[in-house]
Image 1 (tube, rainbow over the protein chains, first blue to last red):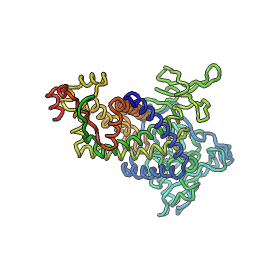
Image 2: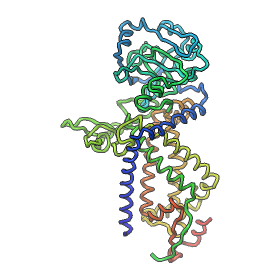
Image 3: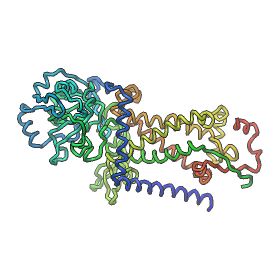
Image 4: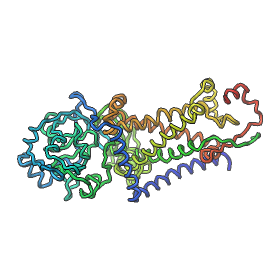
Length: 255
Length: 285
């Protein structure tokens, strides 16, 4: 082979090899065991990120001047489940936030009671898993203090958020979960106001969680209950959240 | 060509291992990164997304005949790119609105969840590989001896540029060492492009953002960090394209073999006097 032919051959081999490799990746992507191997790095990310950052390190906070003129609402934006419509029709007068599971004192709080608790206001950036960001102002009750009222049992490890919406209009309701210690992060709040107004339906009325060190899909909207559990095995399909169980998103959701 | 041929040991084992691991990781990180980008194929400067006024976007619109038209938007300018960017054929051959085409992404179908599984698994291997290489290269003086440009290198830069433009490649002992342009390329990749790529990626993490606020601000905001992540990836693609081209034009079999086995075949020119003696001395310093 002349040098030129050899170069052309190698160049073509490179292109063909690249395409074959991509096809190979596609086939691997169809293999559930392989995907479990890929997903296993989520634990490493979770452990490393928690080790690298102080537990109470705050996500960046901003000023009124930084607020997004348009704050995109994503996921469910207009829930149609009967229980949600019943609450909405009554302007959430019958709404009760339930705290249950591994607690000494189960709680049931009205919106009025939630609003009378000490509050935290924060202007933070919301980062969606899709890649976009918006800055909003949130006011709500710190989650840690509220859970302390319920006296979590020693074996409680996770907080599960149970929601009123059904993201893909099936029988399931949205759910998500975090470590109990993450609920004690200063910026973990149960928000009822957004940008100085009562939280609207699109953004999660009457209560949504704000977890400023997580991606958007973790910050469940339309919250009905906080359940404390020892393990996530019995929640949904066991991966700790609607997106995790149905679409394979990472549980850690900090990147 | 006349002259003697002899073998030399060019690439040490850690270099070869790190190189091929990097090849695998970068290939997958790029493909899965393009798929992730397709979830929101727009880039912005600053902290937040303005949605309708991106700095850069791959978009689709309907043409005069209700056909899908793909285009790249840069600032206020639009460039039609139907078939490749903005609109391309899916696996069935039907045109769909998608940022980067399926043949360039991992997986081929738009799938944010799966692409993220690939991306963050291989990001770990990539980062661990990079850190180990960095430590080894520093301890073994690979940086100071082989990669950092010397005074002689700098003085020879114009000659090197002129040689590259004529596709004239060094022969003999000099071929087994890196020339100044190679050194600059590798140094940019090792100290700027790759760390920049990883750090801008970390700046996108809401969790790491709680300790990297200063770096996010330095980048100009979280959306700027995302844009820079994309730009560094683009610089890496440009580097790889030039790198592969140079391998192809400078004796590809010999080059590829040396990155696999370490052995590099040196062709000693028949007339050694082509290289001035002083220059040879400098090279061997």
